[in-house]
Length: 264
Image (cartoon, rainbow, N blue to C red; front, side, top):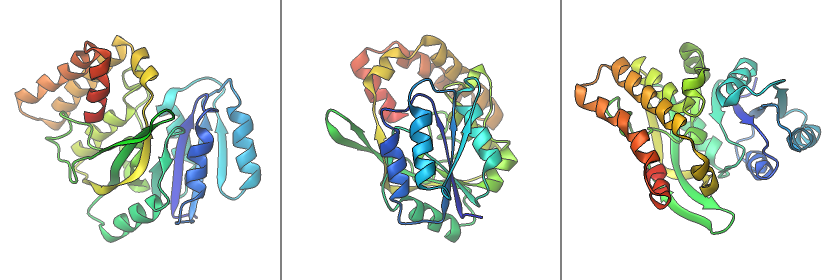
């Protein structure tokens, strides 16, 4: 049984996935398995995944959805197949730094009071290369969750026992683009604690074209998650005002949307 199970959902990731997979292979911590669920891709994703599995048969476990289940459904399939003590998230368009798994696993080993650990990130894109470093609150609390996403989802490593206790990811239309935010509300409502290592352990790809394509209905979904989350955490009334933030951000000019995303 490996120490770490990496879980990843991929849909049409042929353009960026090699960088992500290579960064996993390059980890200094080697006791890991990588479980990838192909969410009914229509590009060369299945071919590339088979190439990596053939090269590293003891490392990569491949799953495939017959129809598109979105990220939450794909991640739940990965969780069901995972055997590691710790679960590391990864997206198909980001890059882990080589020490990520070693530092996050060591932190969880040394701090049993925390159930999840994340890190800061550095933005990058294919045009400009590495950009701004974005910091997260080191030890977020229930009062931080409505204000800002407490963890960068692709940086986190969580105890599998915690994922199991929470029932994995919620799968419905409301969480189709906000599965991580929903998870954090449930995480803190259950009394768990998390921590962000105050250094960059992942390069986070910024796709400006994706921001332009974001639909209003997704912002409405996000507002509902915040509203229900504040209720779940039993926070004071003023925190319900943060439910308006996703819709307000959708109304921003394009040049300000990128700034908003950095603060999420």
